[in-house]
Image (tube, rainbow, N blue to C red):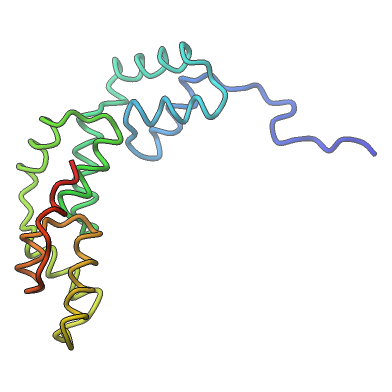
Length: 165
């Protein structure tokens, strides 16, 4: 039985630079994320690093821009500051920059939490204490601070949940 032509047979493998440029054309990526994706695609560390450096010099890749886009995206999706902070950390964004981005985000976290509750549970009030606790857990999982969750749900929430850093 003859081999069927594979997806890559007869194709010239594109450079790490070209591969990274294709990824960046779809959406912003952090340096760390690009490096990981290039390594998973079989590019050597030096070639990947060189390509990412070149893209940075050309302003196609910028970690600050990536972080700003991620914060805007996640806040519009209804995530809280702790969840956003944790995600930024996975992309090697420095703590000081994360603080700055969250401080300048101009988000009313309590209004955002209330909006998430309305979307998830409608306008009806919780039937009992257990339902109030479920709603509080929902907001905590979305990354809202315990104090915000307490105000939004009137539930007892442990402040230790705020110490995700």
